[in-house]
Image (cartoon, rainbow, N blue to C red; front, side):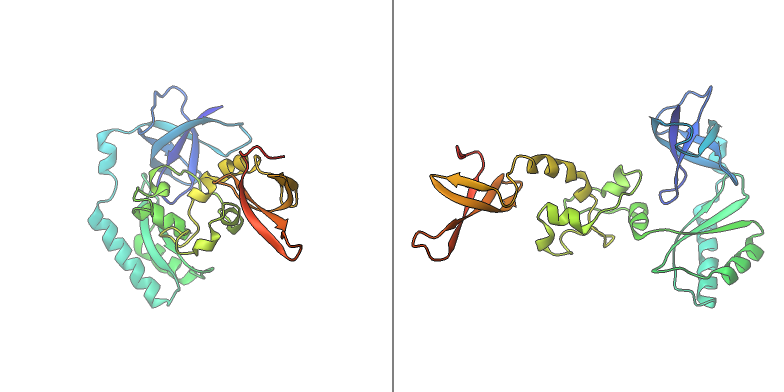
Length: 265
């Protein structure tokens, strides 16, 4: 089944939607149905999925100019955010409010926040419901979602990948950094502005795996210029290995970095 990938906010889920009879392209804004409201979203791509693979929503139509007039303006958003922050302070909750979203049909307001742990916000939810007289959703998001929403430049000087093109966050592990031999640089140099390991470690993982296939495994016995030694380490990008040899005087050992493209056996 061919579906459209639709984003309602930068920090909310990616929705997969059917669009029978509607001519669409990437970048179009559409009106769609979700499980609890009608929303205005943006198409960020298309893909093939199995019907059982994802929960499929439905696009009703493309937007018209008048649809955007129904979305509350920045003044209204700031007022609602200010009230919510006041209530968070009142209930002394350990949470940071980062954004607000109004559903297209006006039936729901979603407040996005970050927190180090779970938050008991039942009292806050009661106050917000009484104030705004609609369905209130408090959505805890990750710190990477906040970075994606706010945007910035990465260490490379380019716009953050999460802001520019990443659709779904994947797990980035310390094992990736170790395998790519960058963990020695320290966490500050391999972490993004969100404080988490940089997503580009995930982009480059497959390339490192392919390049590593060219290198003999650690422990392999090799011959270099007629001297027999054992591989004890790799330098994947340089395509070299560290080879340990017995010392010429028979006492101790010496190590040599060897290019695997040399004509060795």
